[in-house]
Amino acid sequence: MYYKGNGVPQNYAEALKWFRLAATQGHAKAQSNLGVMYDEGQGVPEDDAGALKWYRLAAAQGNASAQFLLVGNAYHIKTVPGRKTDVKDAEWIADLLRHGLIRGSFIPTPAQRHLRDLTRYRTHVVEERARLTNRLQMVLEDANVKLASVVTDIRGTSARAILSALVAGETNPTVLADLTLGRRRSKRAILAQAVAGRFTPIMLFC
Image (cartoon, rainbow, N blue to C red; front, side, top):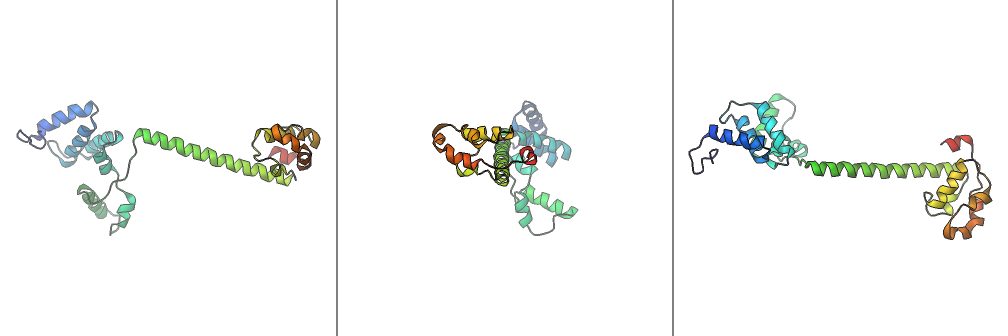
């Protein structure tokens, strides 16, 4: 009301008081408005540091206006004519941003950031698992062990039991084939031929 003069005379000092009270209690919109007042010098001397402080607090709570003012969309800025490195262009870009001519970057909320971090970590773990599986397959091929030609998944229960025995030093194909479980026990003769390889100490280490 006091900020825009709706129903009462416009009074920046009074608006500043109420915005500050609400902002200190965590109200994101008030924090954003307080940032604007410091930015524009409305009721207070212009203070870029003070404006940035309140913009950041509002942006951290997901306030779209504050997020827009804090981070311009780099791709969109790149398409705007002119160089982006000297002081005058920096001032020009800031002026465009003030007038809403540059789109703001999307800044995710804390919950979205946490979910993004977990999703990215899961992707990394899945990729690492695939990389290690491929490495294991290469070692088995070098040892002339054709385990993958008999079992569907070399990370399965039967395959892991055979691999553990191989690492422990077991080389008897019949003993290794007997470690298989379930329906694959009917393929023990084929499996015994598939695991009859030649492991070197270096291969076991890898």
